[in-house]
Image (cartoon, rainbow, N blue to C red; front, side, top):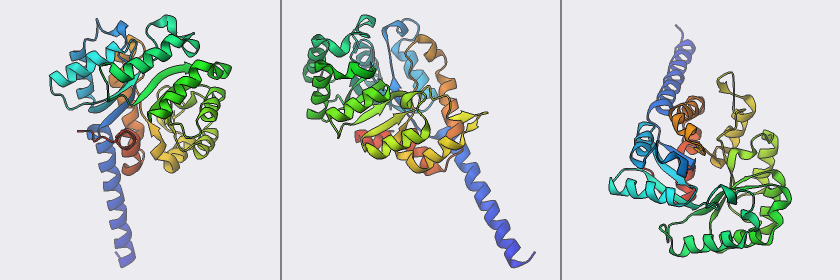
Length: 288
């Protein structure tokens, strides 16, 4: 074997080993940050806090963005994590729903504005709240007086907005506050990747959360469009379980395994950003 052939063989072996190491890391040991975690009231009977923590630990979830209906759910979970001294960071957000009846009216309800202010100032997570939402908002719903007050409150206290919204409502958020910090739930569900890239270029405070983005993979592998987007914007995405119904807790292991499978296709530094390092940067914390 000549010198060039030896060098090529060595390079190929090194590359293969690096890829194998990354696959093993992503699939088996890499920490995860669940940036869309609900512990809603319906799940409590079947999934008490101790069982939910077991699920997190089994999946190496080291941090959660907690937003629950009602907010008491996040409090119960955080209290259990603290009492058992578990190595799981809780990033608390204020949910805008007290019950299901609030879903269609919250954005024009002054009681919700008052609740947010109260939870921030004197609730269980006083001094620790990092955001508002997840909330659902579409089109002209975002033009209400009450929603403008919520955006202003978030700006005043440097809070993130966790928005399950269409492009029209997202545009209103940035009209109300051009420097808003927004986690876009599901990254708009079906918004084309080139449009997502354009919006991220336009708005420095926009982060995409990836639950229910079923087009990220094709035939079990990363799609070309998403691979390109992650290659250039890995610092702008987060993972999430979105356990909005109890069935999603049943599927939690499968959901995290799905993320790990396609993360393993990315370079390690890109995979780490999406898996947990973006969350560390955003919230100034270090996951165990």
